[in-house]
Length: 453
Image (cartoon, rainbow, N blue to C red; front, top):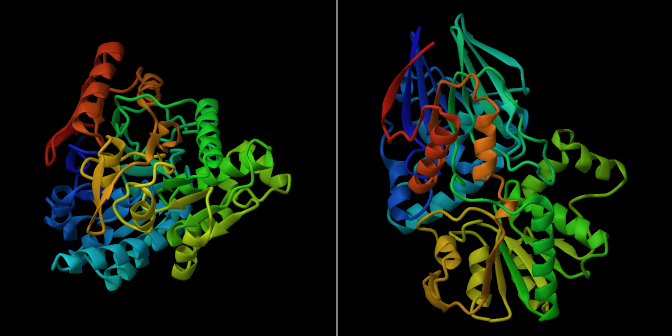
């Protein structure tokens, strides 16, 4: 039996996941995400799909990050009418994620004189096609094909998707969790895999370890408090926000930090934090033990949720020291821009990145040491201290990715390295080839390969 795999997205960069798997008379997609970065990258989202959306039988979604789900309403608008499968938690999360993306997209596209990629009708239609399933529940897709979701440990509800076809198995990792996570369970081991398609966001970089990252975070906060400054943390609303809140909660209640005002200035982050509270059964044992002990892990003295615009504006009236967590995580939109515009020129300000900064984003420019940035039409002189903690990334680093492949090297026949910048993907594939002796390749956008099953 043979199958055809097409890399319709997710190559040449870390975003835009979209993979087509064709077998016999059936076609399925794994993920359908937005390409993120600068204007050139984002323009790719308006390019028609390389396949006919009306011919796709089903879509399987690994998790709710927008670079994995953001084009789904456009897929529906283009004629897709099959079922959409994900875990239950992912289904809970996609609704607020779509609403936020729709709002941002409407504003940005109108500003550029372009038609939005999709509208609220397309979003509602996409949600009506959704079928949530449990981890390890077998989805019998056809007589010869079964799909199984496994816990990826990346964000709430994240999954690796195992395709069992004929006599062989292929695993699509989505994004692999940076285990151990402050909140989530470790990435699950999936045995007997023949073909592996894996991410490589941090394919050439190492993270700080669990204790080290926490100590660095504590030191950064203490330094900001000591100099009576402002700590700005651009955060991704899904997972990074909840991880950092949990860590600060532990540090404050453990007496390691003074009580300093902390503002979560992200309506989407607030909504998603509520969804996390409703899904505590998916947390790891340590986090669940803290909760059973009576601790509200997302609440501590002087933490303020500022969902309303007037509450956000009132943050300015609070004298430093203070901590402001706001979206977006790459400083390319959202309320963090207002705070960066106000405070980046102050040498007492610290800007802390806790996640990946894509090429072409303001976050990457700031992380690379740019001293002048344009924010909301105004040139800002950057005098703030810019720091990064990679250890809070929800993605595995190069060693974690390598170890993941090492655990299944006895059965894997070919590894496709995707979802990374060219340098990261190439480094990881070469490392897998050189040290494990496996056939590891970095596919090109639009490339198709035939696989034997």
